[in-house]
Image (cartoon, rainbow, N blue to C red):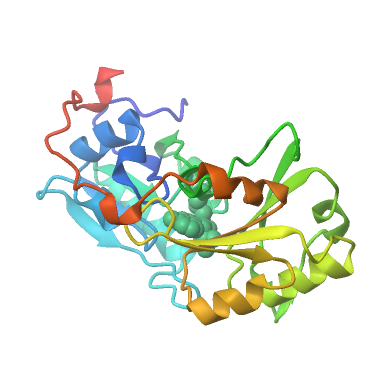
Length: 274
Ligand code: SAH
């Protein structure tokens, strides 16, 4: 059986859709079309209000949480809910922050759907690293200083960071750390201990691409205390590497000047339109 959603089929279907990092203008056309035609939308805390506002008022919304230590709904319960709603014939929109396949457990969710024979489709989104870097004026690669870019998670397990340190400290690369705010002091100390210069530039970006975007830049030596002083709160992304210096020249985004989205957006709706 094809897992692709057939819009003419009577049975339901799940659309696993990347909602991007915050700014609704960064949604894909596919995401927007599906948002306008779904029967029910499941979303978690990373999906911005600006994005949710694009759902028609009649769409049923279910918040399934997922903040650190505050899982409103367990992953298994979310998986079961998706299956149940689709079996009832609904077109189910599973909205996830950023891209569903980057640190989003999207793979686990569609694994259950595949096992249960539910049709699904995956729509990529702009992952936080890409959106945040653009709006922070930090190119993730640059011919002069970074030929590679690593995305890692800095989630603490039992208070420690399970990272491949030798891979993280290779020269001429940028490291982007998701979920790293709590572990920031350990991250900076670890990178220095494994060979990066304490003067390596680094930045923490809070709520990138939104009106609430805040950025703190420093070095591996200074960043943790600067961020503590600034009292940044999640979601935040950490960017480490020489590319952070480029921000001094390339910074362009003015969060305070973001204009409200002008509706309606004239994109034909209906999943069958592609
Ligand atoms: N699937 C998502 C990532 C989920 S993990 C994606 O592709 O972006 C959640 C982490 O993403 C957060 O802890 C934070 O590190 C990062 N993140 C998501 N949105 C962000 C934003 N607007 N600004 C900064 N970091 C963000």
